[in-house]
Image 1: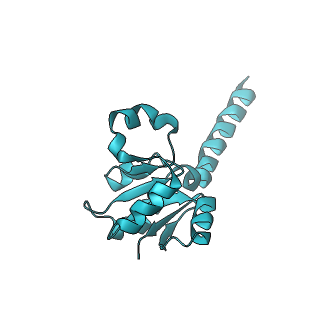
Image 2 (image 1 turned 30 degrees about the horizontal axis):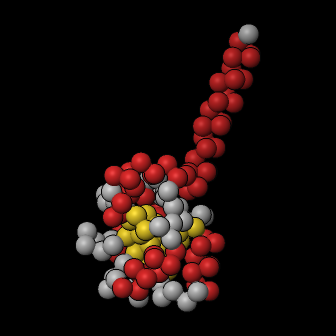
Length: 134
């Protein structure tokens, strides 16, 4: 019984220690650190095709959601002005903004590049890219 308990304890400790290797996949803290110098209170910051849950927390600000609802559907109903329904509307708004930031999945970034959306990469993690309007 003691050997089994000790084995389970050691296995649990090993799993907990190994979980840190996956933290970049789940936390946007490293991404927030990369882009902090570009984030200002008056610069629009969009989240296209996704909503990275912890990024607004680490940046201390909200994001304007574009082409995504998911778990935010209720909040979008409460503040529809903070939501852009499709990519075309996002692209129009992006081009109209004097300065702007956006976070998006890697595949969305590749598609937006192909469409010629003016943007400069300022940060990246294993799942997302953050861009600014040049």
